[in-house]
Length: 153
Image (cartoon, rainbow, N blue to C red; front, side, top):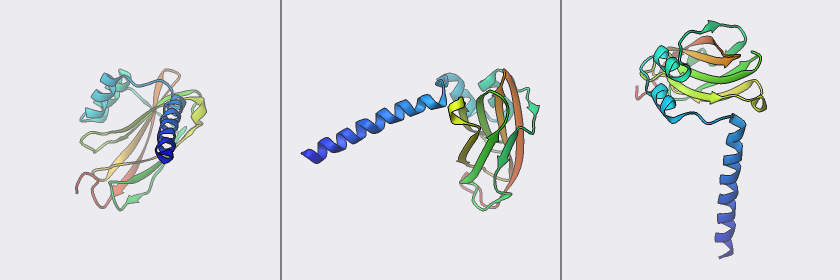
């Protein structure tokens, strides 16, 4: 019986930490705009669903570290470093995926300027990182060659 109580306490504590931890990522994303963005068939439509516009400026203040060649497109590691002042939101897209939006993350100062994740790429693609900062959108891109497809290829 005591093990059940300990397990329940552990699960409750984990849920509480998860709920508090999500506060580090900032405000919650609206379900409708998020759903439309993740279902978009191209980068421009995804950006319009997320931000109301697809107009972005190129910048060197977003650094993307990803392998030049990914042996398996199902798990492509991506590390993003942002040096833009006051970044508010980030989106990572694979421009040749049938649904390009891979990740959207509201940003806060608590996160710092680095983010690491893994995404799926269907085929050789540009990884496009879009950051909203100061009410404007900025982007950087990096090509990754995929030898085995991430969408069942």
